[in-house]
Length: 302
Ligand SMILES: Cc1cc2nc3c(=O)[nH]c(=O)nc-3n(C[C@H](O)[C@H](O)[C@H](O)COP(=O)(O)OP(=O)(O)OC[C@H]3O[C@@H](n4cnc5c(N)ncnc54)[C@H](O)[C@@H]3O)c2cc1C
Image (tube, rainbow, N blue to C red; front, side):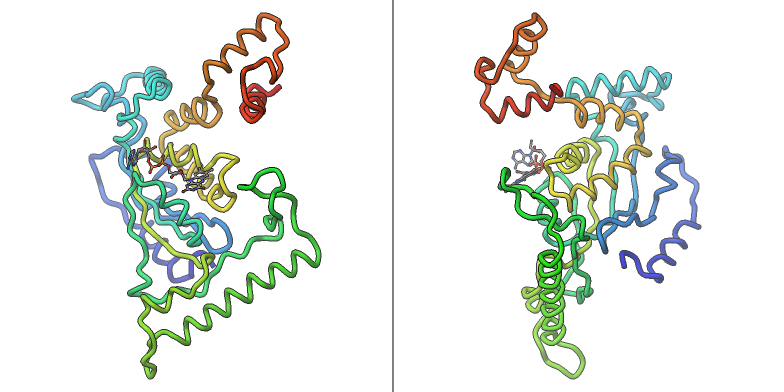
């Protein structure tokens, strides 16, 4: 269960409390504040706090004394200009703080993004819950035969059942042993900081993660991408939905220039120019490697 009834009651209670502020608030983001959005089988993301909005980006870019906004159209044009020209620091003026519950093997990929502030649940101090990520049947894939870093077709029938059984029984056995090892009343046992070492990487952890919008876009660019592992991509997708409601102009520019855009090498641009002149360019005459050519064709959707 991603959130227990007690935790949900705390969230509901928080959402009844308001306080007046002179700071900019965003109605779309206020609607998300504190709510838990389920991700995977036991995970979630929740917005705990945020600072800034689309106009804060313009305000910083113009180093304004007032709100810094002009017309909505004018602001959107400025934000698109900043995004297009990699003028990144105005985006750093917006911040978001998330509470994330995620499997440890996903956390290990996530933590590679160093430009954020993190505080993780302490398994030295607290006892971890018996919650393990077990893939849904439609995400139980075989190893890809073309990509060493990817997945192939779905496992089916007896093979899927066999693998699921191993995942479930290993997780439960490791947790049973964890419980048997830790020191509890009436049992000396092992310190929590040591007992946890036997737990598998699909157990859930939690953290608060605070990041500015520029670095969040970098995270989303890499982790909402089709090449990212499914289990982290679903978190990036859930965060993207929230960000679209928080800073719609900035998110629109990000979608256009980064998510939907492509970076072209000099050689690739030259190929496009030759194609536009009517030349039939092939991989052999393109000057690109096979891999580059494949990616180029995907980018221009040939
Ligand atoms: C599809 C995919 C596959 C991956 N596979 C692997 C893998 O097999 N093995 C592996 O180890 N990692 C892997 N990674 C992780 C990847 O190499 C990066 O570590 C991760 O994406 C974080 O990116 P980042 O360093 O740009 O982000 P951040 O740490 O958030 O940094 C953002 C930017 O800040 C700057 N920066 C931050 N810290 C420094 C610093 N100390 N010095 C200089 N500049 C800095 C850089 O410009 C950086 O791009 C993979 C990532 C993806 C998306």
